[in-house]
Structures are given as structure tokens and as C-alpha cells.
Amino acid sequence: MDVSIRNVRKEFDRFPALRDVSLDIRSGELIALLGPSGSGKTTLLRLIAGLERPTEGAVFFGDEDASHKSVQERNVGFVFQHYALFRYMTVADNIGFGLKVRPGATRPPSAEIRRRASELLDLVQLSGLEKRYPNQLSGGQRQRVALARALAIEPKVLLLDEPFGALDAQVRRELRRWLREIHDTTGHTTVFVTHDQEEALELADRVVVMSQGRIEQVGTADEVYDTPNSPFVYGFIGESSSLPVRVEGGQLWLQDRTLGLTAEDVPDGDATLYFRPHDVELITDGCGGCIAGTVAASRRVAGTRRVELEIGGDRHRVEIELPIEHPAAQKNRVAFRPRRWRVFSESGAVGGPVASNGRVHHEELARTGT
Ligand SMILES: Nc1ncnc2c1ncn2[C@@H]1O[C@H](COP(=O)(O)OP(=O)(O)O)[C@@H](O)[C@H]1O
Ligand SMILES: [Mg+2]
Image 1 (cartoon, protein in one colour):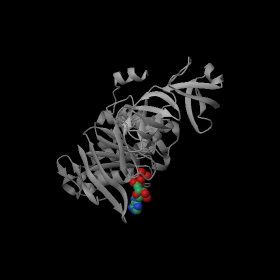
Image 2 (image 1 turned 135 degrees about the horizontal axis):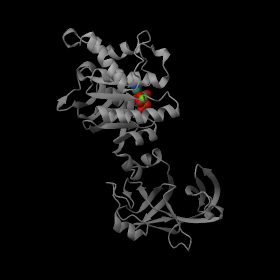
Image 3 (image 1 turned 180 degrees about the vertical axis):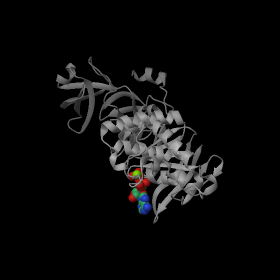
Image 4 (image 1 turned 180 degrees about the horizontal axis):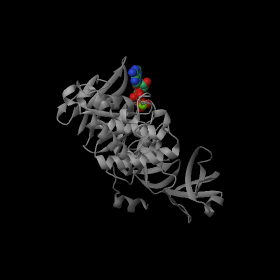
């Protein structure tokens, strides 16, 4: 089922939790809504579900305006972080619940409900646990049952709000992989809310990055990681270093030094350069145009060394990443140039060697020498 969110605004007591949000979710897609706490993820999910009505705008299911349809009419399945199972019901009864409460004509016979429950338990890899009660299950097992319960009604859309949020890291990672497999088996249209970037990038076909009630960027994991379209996305996804710069005639300057980076479409004026600490090229033989700094600190991070450089006296600090034994980390002064980078001007213009569609402009790379 395609779901289309069209210019939706949602206010709570005039506080805008969502501001003009539009998003097209394709049938069979697994979409992650990713953003910090309070960015509007749950509100957007509840609007898709029919638990909230938009203040403005509409939610379409296929060609149909579903904005005023009930949760039941929309036939969506849910899993929430703390959507507790019914404590006094067995696992099988929990899973069958959504079918059992259907009105007469649409309710399957009880033998059929039992059969479906046991089929779904196979799918979520909990066969044999039909007769257990929720308090006899681990947290991870409970969320699997919750997912089976959501799937039992054969939902048009499956909605998951931080379903693994309360579980420990190891279990989360396992369930994440497992959810992807289930999704590929069942082919449901799935919307998954998380504030964990690793979870979103690993799991989703497309990631929707949200901040303050707006969508900042929509793209594949590669697109949002490699070509963030705003300082917010640069900072929120992955690690980033930034440096205030000046654009003059399409050249980037830091104080009186040119950086050897070209951004022709960006107007003259103040801007901020962003790059990934691991995506830099060290420059050893003289630096006509580059970023040079003094090593202020250095620490080991897993298999690499993080070096903190002071640039322009002690005015700015940036981090770059070097192989663990790299001799440059021992030096006092290190010069480098970011390989992939973007510059955001105060007027909102964006420049850099990576085009917004995710492809690299080769002429531009050649010109900047990156
Ligand atoms: N029922 C509500 N009444 C008032 N404010 C709400 C309500 N639900 C959400 N909000 C506010 O809307 C904003 C977005 O909330 P939410 O969608 O829950 O964000 P997220 O899920 O990204 O953490 C927050 O500022 C929150 O306080
Ligand atoms: Mg939430």
C-alpha cells in the first residue's frame, strides 16, 4: 500500500509538532523516521495510523484520502516500545486477539485463528511458546510476539515506534537483522521510528531525517550519509567536523589562507565547511591550499586514532582520523584536505564536490585536486 503524506501540519494547543510535512512511502518499502527526541516522529506515525488527525493537509492510502478514517478502517498494525502484551493472555491468545475481536462476519473461526497464531510464531521464530504468558518471556521475545500480533490482522501498513528501544544493544542488533528478514519475507509497507542512526541506516530502504517538526532529508542510507543536505543532517548522522570559512569568488578561505577547495555556486560571504573526520587526505609536501593545524590532542577510537587539531592559533578545533600507527599523529603540525565535503553559506546555498543526487562531479574533483 502506497502512503502519501501531503502538506501535513499538526498542532497540539497551537504548538506545531509537525510543520508542512510531505512524504511518499512506496508500497513494500521499509522507511525509517530518524530524528532526535521531540522532532515529531511519533506524531507522524500516529497520523499515518489514524490515532491523530492532521490540523492541515491529508494522509492518502493509495488513491484514497484516509485523513478521516479510523484506525480500524485503515487496517494498520502497530508495535510500540512499551506496548505491553495482555498479561493474562497466553502468547497464542495475544497474537490472535486482533482477529478474535473482529465483528461477526469478518471474524475467522477459532481453529483458523489458532492456525494463524502458530504460523506467525514460526515466522517470528518462537514456535512452541504458544502457551506461555508474557512474564515467562524475555524482552526480545515479547517484542517478537508484539510483532506477530501486529501482523496477525494482515495490516496494509506496519508501524513500529522504537520497538527495540528498551532492549540491550546486543538483542537490538539481532532483532534489527531479523526484522529486515521478516520484512523481506512478508513485503509489508513498514514505517519504523528510531532515534538510533545505526539502526536506521542498517535497516531501512530509505531514511527520513526529521528535526523540529520538519523533514530535513529523505534518502537511502548512502545518500543521507554521503551527501547530507543541511548542517543538521551532517551533525546528526555520522561524525562530522566543521570549520567556519569565507567564500570569495568560489574559493574557500580560512583567515588569510586558501583551502584549495572550490565551491562555484556559493555566493561570497561567511559559510561553514563540513567533512567527515575519516574522509581526509594528508598533505606532506608543502601546502599551497589546505587546512593546517597543530595537534592538540590525540586518542584511540577502536581501530583508528582521532587527532584533534587547532586551526588558526587556538580559534578552531577539528578532528581527523588516522590509521592507528600513522606517523602524522606524532607530529606537531598536520596538513590535510577533506576528500568529500560540503559548504553551507549563511544564505542557505550549498556547495561541494558531491552533487545533491549523490553522484560525484568529476570535473569538480579534478579542479579541486581531491
Ligand atoms: N498529545 C500531545 N500534546 C501536546 N504536545 C504533544 C503531544 N504529542 C506530542 N507533543 C509534542 O510534539 C512534539 C513532537 O513529539 P513527538 O512526535 O512525540 O516526537 P518524537 O517521537 O520525535 O520524540 C514534542 O514537542 C511533544 O512534546
Ligand atoms: Mg517518539
